[in-house]
Length: 467
Image: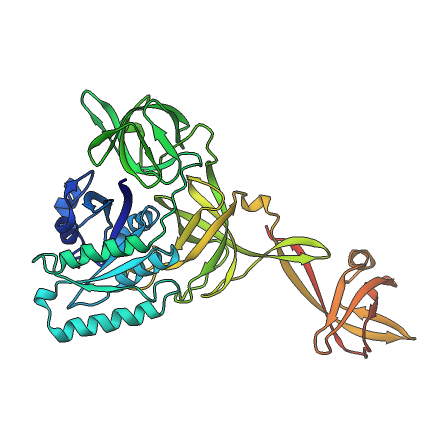
């Protein structure tokens, strides 16, 4: 039985990704090998390229991801649909900024990775050794890719290609690739075009579920229903396809001009939502040197799209038996929190989906990947009732064995609003609670769990709505 596998080719610009794809390819496919006019004009891969080759029982779809700094959006989209990655590094130049970004993406998505040191025919042994040592040092700093294998080739001369194929096969044989074929159907559309006599054709990689000729599906976010007329896999007609397959489908009911990157084909009973706000549990990369702050503009990868968004980081803590959402002034590298992302465009997403957070406004010479996350909700900022902590400092006054607190309120009316609030004396680690008021000047009566003295400083922390 033929097993469909998706292998991505990543790496810095001009390190030989497309040359390697050509050396491996047996059957070209949509947007493969730089055949887009814009790719030919600019001389770089501007979009995901797809092609096929067979390796034993495996039908391998090659996903050629761009290496140019401005095109990290497409790279992130590629990471979602692949099972195994080839990270190509020029033997003479060694790892570059985009090499590091691609490796970080692969590490975040926990994708098994094979390092391919390319152009060994024009590099010295000293160059090759230095590049290999540099790559191993980078791998040792990752969370999931420390033991990744390294292969040395020349894609242009064909040196090491057979060894590379054998290594890919060995890695695939040891991997447990689990396909979710029982869930609803989900296929992000990466290309759509009309073919005379056939109609609208869409291509993509099936992420979950199954599809058969004659099925009725929904296109989100268009909310349009279509019917599947025919299916092709590796340019061969098939009656059905399932998770992991790279396919083309002729569909009825929608013009190709209405479709765009970000559209998803899915079952009529789908759990996907069209949203403009995402709440995620995130972790900031320890390597990212800029803090995230409320209101900051970032970019969020959701499926095949990378969308601009305004971020609000917050934490969830228990206050008096209730869980509260507390805004964070900033989140730094290595820290974890929740974030709500207010998207500037609508996206198709589902609970549990992985996302990546980037700062594409930063120069391409610096690391722009902020961190990763998992979608937990679709609520907007105003629905989350996010609060901020307000602190105020008062002072103890002992009056006839009565413990009073001055300075937290300036009137009896305001003092009465504070009854029941918890207060602390930080220097003595003493806690207390406001029990009542005294007089008309805003004095408070308090009880503490330790001995207090005149002029001890008292701290009151309150939660108020953030915005």
